[in-house]
Amino acid sequence: MTAEHEKVWKNCLSLIKDNVNPQSFKTWFEPIKPLKVEDKNLTIQVPSQFFYEWLEEHYVTLLRKALDRELGVGSKLEYSIIVDNSNTNARNPHAYTINMPTRNAGYNNKNEVGIPLNVNANIHNPFIIPGLKKINIDSQLNPNYTFDNFIEGDCNRLARSAGFAVANKPGGTAFNPLMIFSSVGLGKTHLVHAIGNRIKEVSPNKSVLFVSSEKFVNQYVDSCKNGNNNDFLNFYQLLDVLIVDDVQFFAKKEKTQEIFFQIFNHLHQNGKQIILTSDRAPRDLKDVDERLLSRFKWGLSADLQVPDLETRISILEHKMYEDGIKLNAEVVEYVAHNIDSNIRELEGALISLLAQASLNRKDIDLDLAKKMVKNFVKNASREISIEYIQKLVSDYYSLSIEQLKSKTRKREIVQARQISMYFAKQLTKAPLKKIGMHFGGRDHSTVIHACQTVSDLMDTDRKFKSDVEEISKRIKINTF
Image 1 (cartoon, rainbow, N blue to C red):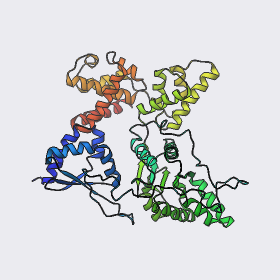
Image 2 (cartoon, rainbow, N blue to C red):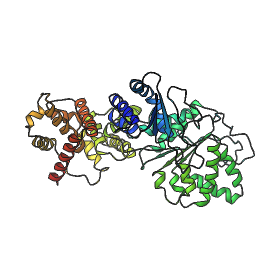
Image 3 (cartoon, helix red, strand yellow):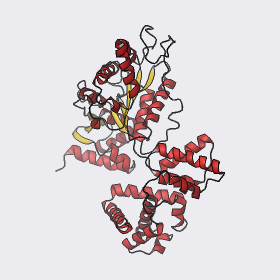
Image 4 (cartoon, rainbow, N blue to C red):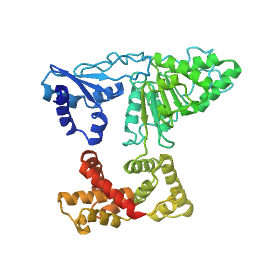
């Protein structure tokens, strides 16, 4: 028989599932485990304190509604938070109830008053320009990198949300340290600069410093040569917010790791914020001391993934808006569709396209875009046509191509049409408008809706997912 707590939570999930999108349900509710129910108190287990805070921030009303329906008004939800055993200073798991002011309860009560950077003018400042004596330093932040021009998408939503929370309350959230990791060119440096700039905006008295791992290593080496490594240590321990870029380069540098370990401990124990970037997850860092790795895992590690087509289009449109440029939507979609691995390359392609148009005094049309993209895309595979996709899908479902293009709303034909649009977007270089024209003159918003519907159904309908995977295999087999 199903235990009472499991039954209660299952019923709660049925309500929750109807009120959130499938991806959010999978991310934030499937990992939860019900532990027990006593009277009107349900206890659930969540994977981390970050997970708990996210639920409290975004879904507390929905949880309250679901629990009231199952256990009645006055019911309580308690969280059992899993604590990483590698954190030697970790607290034991705590439980919180959603009908109490749990935010900051037992947590986040750290001192918000930053230590001024000029408390001791005798400490050597490794950033000071020779000949200058003032101890105040520039934060080394790029003011052009902000949250306003960091385009949000599914690929970066978690990292951006955590970064924004840190920026508004540095040292006062569960995300300390905050580790942002990704492959090159996906925006991690932009994001941490945006966090630093936001902190300077909302907390101007806090001392914020961005430093690359390479510069940190060189400063430490110089301090050892000059006999002032204690000043180096003291200087970094005075900061309120320390942002270190590309910590993977600390690998095999044992002395640097040791000094950074001391700085990390001091800042963390005094409620100061630490933000790190890396090209890989903490668990994948090699030749880094285990004590340091365990501390990297204390807070939140969030990755930035390759942006999807809609996000890439948004990035290009924002870049064009900033530069006062207007391009044909067909050109923008083509560039975004073909350059899909790196935001840096995407922006570089736009710059190259503008340069080509300016030098050759040509209008920026689709033909020019195609010629330019060849310089960025290597080993381009043979293009699959929309007609070919339509034929395969219609054959699979025993339909005619005319039915796919028709206005009928029969469920089986609508799904076949949506699957065809989904593969047309995924596997061809056609812009959304052109795809829509191949399906009875539908517009680009219909194509976007069809693709989203297919993605959602694949998450919730096993039979539908099996059909899509089988069609995908047939397309690939018959293409090569």
